[in-house]
Length: 267
Image 1 (cartoon, rainbow, N blue to C red):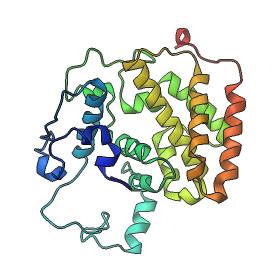
Image 2 (cartoon, rainbow, N blue to C red):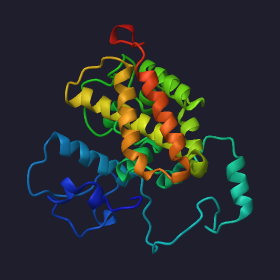
Image 3 (cartoon, rainbow, N blue to C red):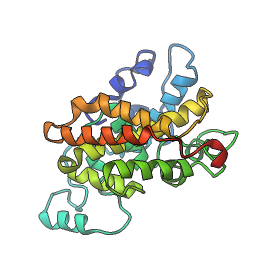
Image 4 (cartoon, helix red, strand yellow):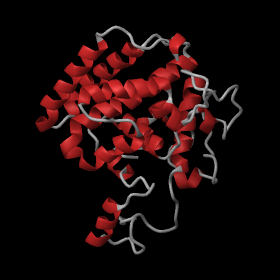
């Protein structure tokens, strides 16, 4: 999945699973992975397992041997005409999704963005499709928690993107705004790192609030997380984009030092 196997990316599960030599196709029954484990799986590993199941659900299985195909033509053969049609298309098909694997971010975040692109992230509405949930409301507000709501429509997300847009000097307000930059990663490498860190930081904080009772304070918490991640990911940034990334990080630091603009009471 991306640049490394699921065994490596979900190592804590792999070391206790019994079917180490089986393929996903061997174990997938159409809705679940039929795996057994050597010991009881606690809540953190259970959440990780559900994520693996979500990944499996995005895979298209066939009896043919693996081969490289161009998915935008009927015969799987690339043509410049088909490429032109795709980049000129203004519908709802997210043609930028395969480009996620070229982003200069950690492999774990590649998978997160892939699942987000496929609407397979375990937000409460998606989790409710697999098990009973106590509530489907967003942890930041009272609206239903969906992928679109959590990452872009929630009051917290909207304010976060407005600040990030200010730091990037670029308007970001939807997943289309984020994903469209993936197609030109050479030009937008620094932008893609910051946007990826923004989405990942929001998701990590959401999970900490849900499972570890971490409290929400104000937007600065998220901004400093984005800064920390972007600094850690500098080593992945192409040399020609590193100065731009450092400028974005500096801008975010300046914005994070400002007085808080949103509290839980105002949500």
